[in-house]
Image (cartoon, rainbow, N blue to C red):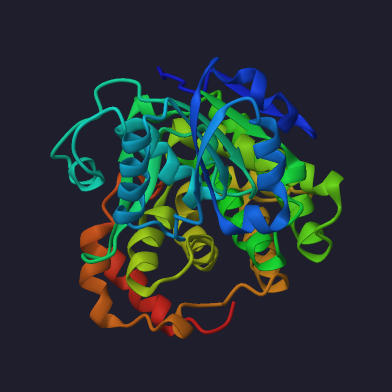
Length: 384
């Protein structure tokens, strides 16, 4: 086996790690500060701005939408070029960080976001210095080389990928996640859990990613329901935030699986939040994959204290799948896509647009015909 690992030059995790932000930026930086309204409302943005008080700042607050469309990123790029910024700092969830990540890469280049989204141009070198500070424990965008964007007209959701888009610095401060409401805690946490689980079973998993993924699965499983019910518990928030970071460090190198392969077209077509789409898909995809990776699921079940060595792989797999269904139900995740209107008229689009690296890494291959059969089963699914 051979593999290459690609991470930010600096990853800082821990309470109060935000306080290191100013010392990590190049001197005399003119900063494009990208943040969402929730960071502003929670007071997190003020803390970041205080850290940047010695730098010239150009604010881009509230410019990024959820499931960010290409035009959101174009607006950031236009602002950054016009103001001559030299660095980008992003504070927010995955949508904010992904949008800022692309802006940091493209501001020094020519063309708009669509040129790179559709492969008309390539990112051929490092962009602006980029720092990512996540306020959610979920997407892992702070350490990845890709950014998930949406062409809202064509309803296509996919990634721009480049080794030059890995952030220079990732600061993961669990205190920044304290303001997450329960629904966001659930969706983002289950996204991170899914990423870890799919990384562990990915056909491209390796001896570095598998231990990271297993530890991420166990940390998130043990603590996510608790922080859903009590978001002020900083110790458990820290465990989930660390699990999310470890998950991203794993999947960014190993790839994912069919949950993410299908979640992108379903989410973009039906406007399902990404974490919710992954959560709905996770249990049925695990049932599909079980014949190919029961040994892996058994290891994860033991890591989550759902069973012990000596139990059969089939039993442990069944316990893991059942427990995940229970976790989703406890956190009010919809049991199916019924409320979002999934029907057979959507199948052709989903099949056509699901062929990503995630599908290639799924432990059990899915042909187009098998994807169709799977989608038909989802339309009949009403209870977990």
